[in-house]
Image (cartoon, each protein chain N blue to C red):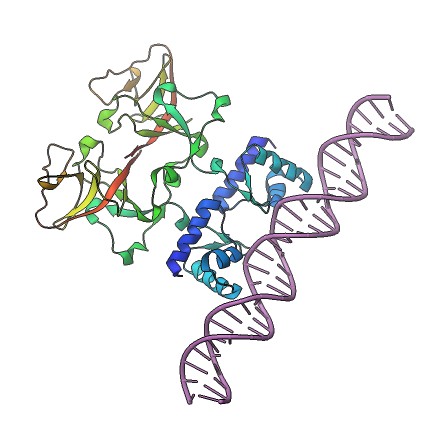
Length: 190
Length: 190
DNA sequence: AGTATAAGGGAACAGATGTTCCCTCGTCAA
DNA sequence: TTGACGAGGGAACATCTGTTCCCTTATACT
């Protein structure tokens, strides 16, 4: 069994069971050998290479390699060679996109009012509640009982909600305005 | 110590240490009591409520509540009341967006050539290598030594790469064309 | 062939951990 | 006051688990 493939099996194990395997599980289910000694040698090498971490008690812990996606540079740069590929930074989408998990929600976008901001129907917005909006933030607001997504602007004339589409009108709230959340990211899945 | 707050502490513990706490760690570090019996009762209740899972050996496992973001409906629907909030489905961005982790990479977008598809400079594209492109997929291609992101189209006249911006021209590859990856998602972070 | 070296197998050990059990103490009703 | 009951504390136990040690087997070299 190859080194890389065995590590991948451990990653899968964690993905399924949400915990790391024990030495004996690695021995029987992954390396398919009978020797504890060699299992330890194999694990030691993985730890040394930074692919695995250890508890104070010796128990295994997942590393960044267990989560997330490898990050490349720009489109123009293209893909690195397989040799360089190992050096790539990995990054979890959740950690990257979510600041305060308690306050963050996913919300599906309907309507064309933010089209020119590159936000289109069917996109998923990540929104965070409880943050103070700044000018030009995209916000989820409840205006006179209706929910919308717009640019937020506050100036000497008061608060206005500005669409990113000339076919829609800027809203000047008459009675009630609650900024319920701020859009922190927009995701389009193909 | 309140029930909810204690659960949140356990979630934090997992977020930091990448493993679940033991009963004794919950007793000393979270509940701040001395009784194993009550610690077990507390954990039993969490397991019963589906907030925690257990190993065949009794060890604790994280549930879906430990990962991801809560998913709402549409913008128009607004936010649910705190009472309903508990019912929301949670979903990890990684699981949602990444099919094949081995083959998926993050790539930053430069240039305006896909502007009308709502993809703009600074956006992050999630791309997957090794998949066969279909018509109208957005692909990362290497044409005559240059890397670009374009719509893919194959018809009787051959393969063409079509920009989503009238200011750019459709590319008819002359010599070399390698479709290196297919764009599976686009993320814009504010 | 004979010997030395390494690899493989597996038992043994110490510490950690979920679970159970027992004792103590306070509260409340009769 | 007394007895019952439940909560809290903590010891005890069986199992699990990383680690080490020793013995056997294979391999390489002289």
